[in-house]
Length: 169
Image (cartoon, rainbow, N blue to C red):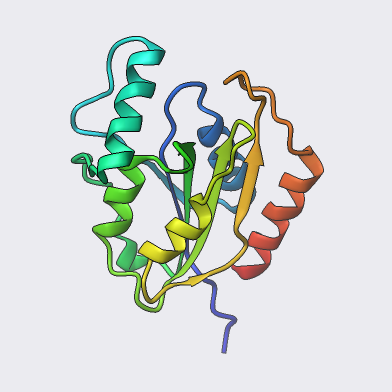
């Protein structure tokens, strides 16, 4: 009898600097997992401030934008890593749409998020939406507070997190 290998899918949303994408790509490089980026059917447009304002309105109203279909079905995976930037102290609306559209029963989820110094309650909110899932290896990665792409969380801490994910598989 062989050792069962758990299949990992990485799903993430990334908008301005691609910080969440960078973390998802590091995780994929280490694990060889399948990966998909969440995209809204109607892309955000306008200036950075326009999108920030729209994002605030969406978060405050609980808006869930339509998202493009993913090329993978989470039913084919044992472990799903879900990454989001922090939008007004919680997950990006596209991530909320994705989480609410899936059956998490019996799945293991790895919630991870990027933030500019205000982690808010993103991880708690993600875990609440994923009813029936077992959350493990949650991670908050901080980037500089000016909205830039300089990672404040130590590289070693991110590497340690990736190692802990690899041990699950």
